Length: 277
Image 1: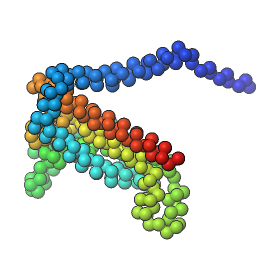
Image 2: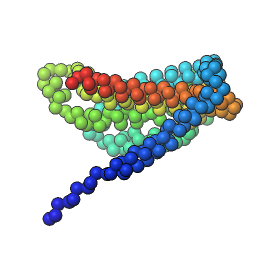
Image 3: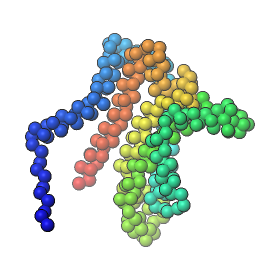
Image 4: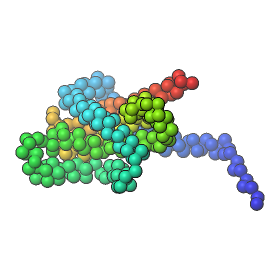
């Protein structure tokens, strides 16, 4: 049987064309919108951009966004890790269904998520009598916005940790158990160090997604200025009111925070990897 002929490497011109296509594709989808945001934010000068960012409505919207993102990060850091652990280390009835449900937020529109929450927690929702008896408000309030953001960010932490846990295996955990370590000690001193970068990237992706959530929090929160308005809803209202500098500036800040978070995580990973060699 004749062995296959190895393919020759691409020529210099072919390599340049491929790289050019990659830059064109990424640039048209990422760099061009960022450039448009920068131009729009600076259209009336740096002073107008700064004043738009410091107006009370914008600051309150960013504070709301950061509070929601912080609560979501705290919840997913605990329960996302727990779900990933159970999915990898245990076999149980309904595991495939649970695995499919984890990816549901990728397929369901955020607006639909908001409507589903309204059906549950709205004034005429299924759980409305119970909420009224407890004097607890979910729709058009912070709890509903947090629930919506929890839903749309559910897969990120879990999907980052599951492959790492699968690659890590059981050998080191079993060795730790034979040496007398408890389950918590084994997780904290053996398993978690191996998960740290998957955990960090899960946090970063969750944080970035929580910052940019719009549809679900608009429907369930209502976007009431001064109460349930997040940064994305501030951008939406600013565009409606033709306050373009404020809208572009807020969008640029949100994108910059997400970009810095991703780049910071990558820098820390590389620095640690170099330091341990």
